[in-house]
Image (cartoon, rainbow, N blue to C red):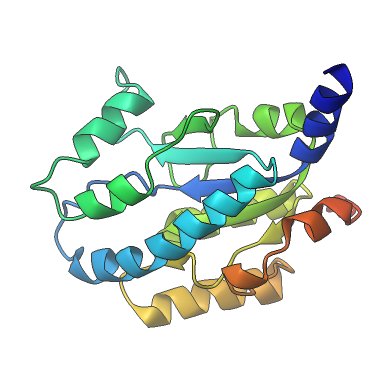
Length: 206
C-alpha cells in the first residue's frame, strides 16, 4: 500500500490543471456571446478534467469570490447553478469532484493575494494547464503571473472562451508568443509527456 501511495503522489506532481472562473453566473450585460462560447468549451474542459483525474493530475478550481468574502466555494457553486441563470448547464457539466482543489481569488489573476503558489509548491507542480473564462481577462492575467513565476504553460485553444472569437484569438497569440505557452487543442494534451518534461528555468529579472 505504501508503494502504491508513493506512486500516486509522484504521478500527482509536475502538472496541474487549473479551471479559471468556470463557476460563474454569467449574469451581466453583454454576456450572451461569452455564454455561447463557454458552453462549447465546457465540453472540452470536462473531457480534459476526466483525463487529468484518471492520470492523477490535480484539478484546481481558481474562482472569483464575487465580492462575497463570507462565502465558501460550495455556496458559489450552488448559487451559480440556479436554473434561471444563463450558464447553469455549464456549471452542471463542470461541477467539482471529490478530491479537487479550489482557490478563491479577489482579482483577475489566480496568483494575486491567494495561496495558489503555496498549493502548487505543495503539489510539486512545474507545468500548468490553464482552462476557463475569459481568455482575454482572468485566464490571460493568470498566465502572465504564472510565466513570471517560472511555470511552463499549456493553454488548450479549445478550452477557453471570451466575448468574441477575436478576443480569444489575440489572448492565445499572446500566450504563445510572449509567454512561450503551448496552445495546442486539448485532444493533444498528453499528461504523461508533460510529467516527464524538465521544469523550465525560472524567469530572471534584469
